[in-house]
Image (tube, rainbow over all chains, first blue to last red; front, top):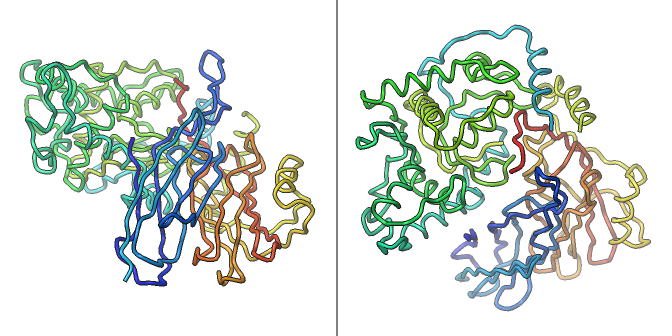
Length: 105
Length: 258
Length: 155
């Protein structure tokens, strides 16, 4: 399922850039019940990591209070051209990745 | 969650309904204009609009081969950006063979059955919503013209009758809220004109994309009526009437609504 | 839930008037319930918590509690020696007190994080920042959550 990544394609060295990510996930809280009364088991993304040319620049622990299709926006300083790698980890062995490149002048 | 109690209570507060009648064309307003700035911002920016996740999924499905015919949508329709432009603004549309209007969802499933030899996608399934959102997204910014076909007249009339007809334990017609009392509040939520400009849309309440039929069914549950089945002639007629009632408003798919 | 509804209906009358006024207020930590306090202590330990530096941007009147946009920012120069290490967000009345932990560093440039959260009810949201000198700073926001008029049964 789809993921939306927004990283500026170009930046000047030293610019503070905003990174936005939106990924498809139900984020089932584990507190809801079906009409028949059965508890719907928890199924959430628990962790998000952003690496910039291999170095971690942002990390988040997520809980059931994060809305479905988690959206995250954060900042980092553009240091060099290269690649941002994103990783989402969650319940039931969930794992997904995405990447985006940037040219720094 | 006893929503009927909120509705009943809110109607008590609302004093006497204004009984304004049908909304003149120049007073028609998208649900967008009833939303707060935060929800508008979520819709406006494609990189933060969660409905775009489904549009992207739909784009992938468009060129994925399906069924025993081993054909993708793209094999017949080519680039959706040109071939599907304006199509959703004309739906529900008349199917000449069936001699009745069909929704975009039904058109997709007819295509699957007749041209792809594939099984029908279930209503509200992720794939059907994604394809429908991708196709409707190609009409974003295009004015709605659904219902213009003269052969659809009796079906538009049927939809209008259903819209005006009181139903459910609360004995309310769609028009009681959406023609006569829009801009007022039901509990804390603004009452909109029920203009279906952005379907399938991402509803914050649902935390997912949903069809106009899902929205209509939840309104019916709200007035404690028995909701019509997905794809039923009644829901299609209601959808057709609502689209013809929104004539001239621009498509917004994928819209975001509270 | 009937209690919620009644409380909400009593608020609804003043909503259009108050809707434009940000209802973000500073409150001492003592005012929050035990679960929230425990969760906060789990992050800060016995360290004192100062009020200030942190800002929560959240609609004072939320259109739907299932998806609430929220931005946390911290007044910090974000230099190599003076930066924000982490931001921790909690709530008072959801089934669980935690919302999210966000880890920053000296090269974050700006101490600001946005996400979308769930709020089961009208309640307080607390954001705590841990600075590079290991001091903790917090702010509290009061959020009014309006319930959808027509909810559908869960499938």
